[in-house]
Each structure stands twice: as structure tokens, then as C-alpha cells.
Image (cartoon, rainbow, N blue to C red; front, side, top):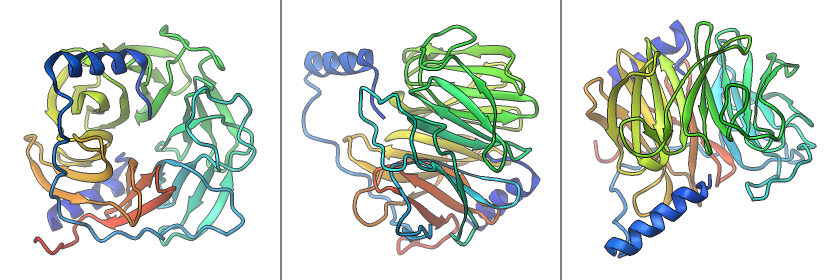
Length: 344
């Protein structure tokens, strides 16, 4: 694992390393369950080594409005950006009024809170990613928009029509995540459209691929997207698999996961990390897998913290530290990827 930690650290120094089912998926799952009698006993939980996790990494003032932690990423200075809903919960129908408290917090690597912003800018924020220029991009599933902010929180650009869902080049369907490569912006769109849509940095449409389904071109809630070395990594959540594409959308690799992947991040040299927020028995948790370039798994860690945990996103620090957005535990979990466990 020292090799993997070194890859993670090198990748961060050289550049970015970077809930709810639509009704159709619910009906399909129920039909399959009834037709084949698949609603029997739960699959047993995975016996993964328990990682040493710091559940109190984020030093949050007692008077801070804090809620579901939805996303996390790091910038070029090593700061850790955290997106949380400030007391608002994922409950449909979504409200229409903006969150009246800061939703973005910037921390030092040791967990010290440095800044907070985002008052009145989002309604149901979901994904956050920081690009190579340290711009902060946020997806909002209620607003149906992708928002780009300066490093200190000034809104600079908005893509999509506020509150209007659609599947054309100017609308989104509950966008989940965003990633970058040079001047290209890749959006995991998302809970409704089940596609990857690509823009340039000024918001001009370039390309798209994917549709709702489980076959060759199908996606079922692309929940996370990341790009590195010409490859686009997608957490195809409800199909329980990782999909790897060329930047033109050609499928290069499809890897089944035992649980449901909520996030994926490349490490470099073909290695990447995935996070499963639910297992095959629908139990929430935080299973981290380190994947080799050939699609085999090098290591598995159970990154649960004390109490209830549901891993929703992850980021990789310059020193190889993994930061997990725990949406159910309302916290950030920090752990070392190269740590030894009692099973090693």
C-alpha cells in the first residue's frame, strides 16, 4: 500500500485527481423482485478490514449550522472544501427557498476551519468539485443547475435553467457531479437523465453519452465522475458498477462492484479508488476499494465512523489522506490509505 499512497501523493502534486431512485428504477426493481422471488434474506455484510478513521477531523464551531455532508474536494493549496446542507435534508418535494446559511466550508489539512460561504446560493446542493484554477463548481438538483464560483465564493457562471428539468443541451435532470480535463467540463447528469454531458469552461455544449438502462450504453444514476489521463471514470450507482470511458465516450472498461458506488477518484498510473455507500443488502456504510489498472482490487477498507455512516463522496489530499463525505453521519471522515489494519 505504500506504492498506492505514493501514487496518490504524486497525482495530487501533478494535477487534479480528482439519494433516492427515479420512479422507473423503483418499479423495475420491484417487478424483478416479485417475478423471480428475489426478495429473500439479505446478503451478508462484506467482511472488510476496519480502517482507523478520524470522525472528528473537521473542527466546526458549536454555533455553525451543519447538516448532510454531500461532497468534498481539495484545491491546489491543499485546502479541503466541504459541501453540506446546513440543516436541510434530502426530502421530496424539495423546497424552493435557498439555504439561508453557508453551505461551503474550507478547511486546512489539519481540520481547522478557514472560511465559509454560499449563503442564499443553493437550494439542494449535491456535488462539489474544484478545478485546476481553483474555481469551485457545485451541482444543485433542485435548481437543476451547475454553478461556478470563485475560490472565495463569488458566483461567476450558471449553466441550466433554474428549476426546469430537461434532456437537451441547455437543461439538466438533477445533475450529480462535475469533473474537468483542461478546458472540458464533464457533468454526471444525473438522477433523471442518466448521461454524461460535456461543455467547455464557458458553458458551450460539446458532447454527451449515456441513457437510462443497464446495457452497453446504459447508466442508472451516474453519481460521480472524474477524469485523468484521458479516461473518464463514472460511478454507475444503481447498476453497481464503475464505467471507464475515453473522453469521446467510448466504453473502455466496466467493473462490477459488490455494493453501490457513490464516488470514484483516479490515483494515477491507472489506479483508482471507489466508495460504496450501500452494500448488496441495502445497508449503508463506507467501503473503499483500491483498484489496479487491470480491474482487480488491491485493497478493501471499511471506512465507517462511529454510529450511522453513509459514504457519499470522497477526495484525496496531497499526502494521500482520504476524505469521505458522510451524508448520514453529517461529518467528514479522514483516513490514511496506506494504514495497516489488524488483518494485514
